[in-house]
Amino acid sequence: MFVHGAFMDLHMWDPQIEHFADRYQVIRYDLRGHGKTGPSSASTYRMEMFADDLGALLEALDVLQTILCGLSLGGMIAQAFAMKYQPMLKALVLVDTAVSTTLTLSDKFQRYILFPKWMMMATIRLFGVERFTRFSLWAAKVTRSEAWLSRDVGTRSYLEDRMLRITMEEYMKIYHAIYEFDIVDLETIDVPTLIAIGEHESGSVYRHAEEMRRLIPGAQKIIVPGAGHTSNMEKPAEFNTILDEFLARCP
Image 1: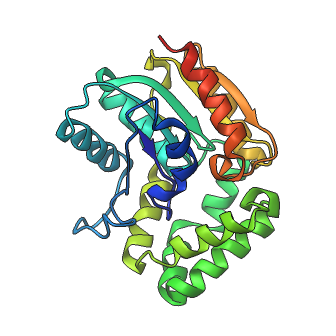
Image 2: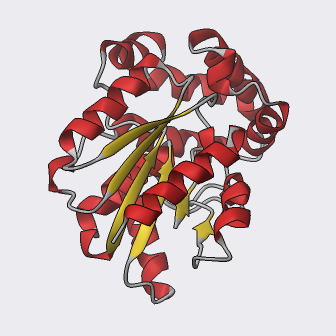
């Protein structure tokens, strides 16, 4: 089961579908507010809501257990899912993701000083979707790096295209869920866990990856060489090999 990142859709996993579908039952879906699922009537989103959506989907598909792989927002959802639906979890893969929005000093600076939630919401309303998308991509490049955003033209084009498809109200609800996410009881996770992180990820996310490795019993951390934040898209061959090796070790 693959869970995509914020403002993306299920197509971010195309390289993995092509690689794994001949050996596994592979499932991917669009989160609420994204892709073909589209906007919902909920006034606000929380990570637990996304996790409940995933649980309901698996139940509807009669999937009793799954190997769950989530990137960025998808990794946060995977952590929330692991807390509430652990019997449905066979193994866990957390990719380029975070445990909280306030773990590191850099996190706190961005959340409370540089991009506080009230300012982010006001900026979205003021700019509108198109200008805000351009601003977000520019800000990511300036505050993190071009390598973090991705040096791959196809990946950058995909990100921009999908971001432009999100409505203003959904943008705000998605950001609300991210801003309110806080660390869960990772010590209780008792399934094989892989933490994958792009070589050019931000220093802050490296700190998050190390915190996950420290808290989740037996978790393995591995770096995807040459990749930034969307490591599965930027370096699909390397990412798939890493995932293959992890799956081979799972009982």
